[in-house]
Image (cartoon, rainbow, N blue to C red; front, top):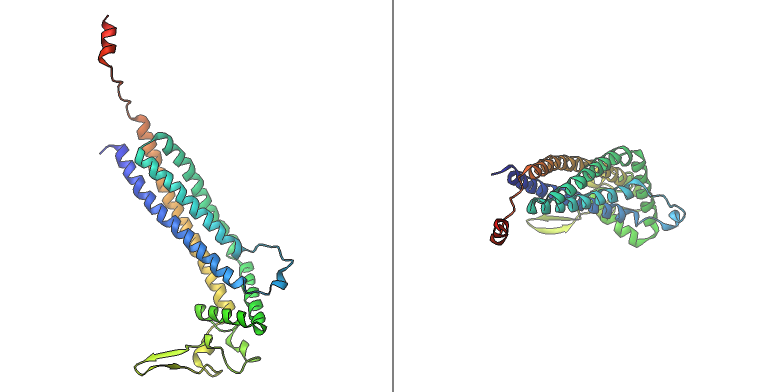
Length: 263
């Protein structure tokens, strides 16, 4: 197998990995955005009529989405270049791949230095507290907040004891509502003595920790995708050089042209 063919096959395989991680970053970032929006949409809108700021938990998912989509598009260019063994497409792919690597590294650095910070913690805490306060007078928000408690396995804003001042027991979202045993299922009382509910963390703490973890995981995924992009870049440069050094085929001389030369 020639150097050109080997580099083309290797570039094709590496681009498959590049696409997989690019799609992974994109899908995870979309899920992250949906989770953040599901909480912020429950806030009291009157409190944010004049707040035109865009906070990092709201902005950083879009950064990851853009980078992930760009990586997928660049990889498609790499697939075509490796398939057709076109020197022009490979050079174009090299330029785009350098841009993608810079974008991936920049996204990871920005996320770790700006989004993974105390300002993010404060935003999440203020948002959860605002939702918790709003739900006291809004049944729909109370149901949505309960769904969040079930999903995050948390209870209350800062702790389960936040319910003591305005309820006679914990909401069912703070407890295991049903027990599935050999005798069937039955409701479990979710009063203030319930051990499970009292051992749960507040939703501000859980949501803050999950947000930090997601940002770090996405940043690590971007860094690893950038490493794969660097490998792609090395192989693409090798492929481009091998295609340039490949001897050009001799032009085929037609029989009529040879007779004209003899005459």
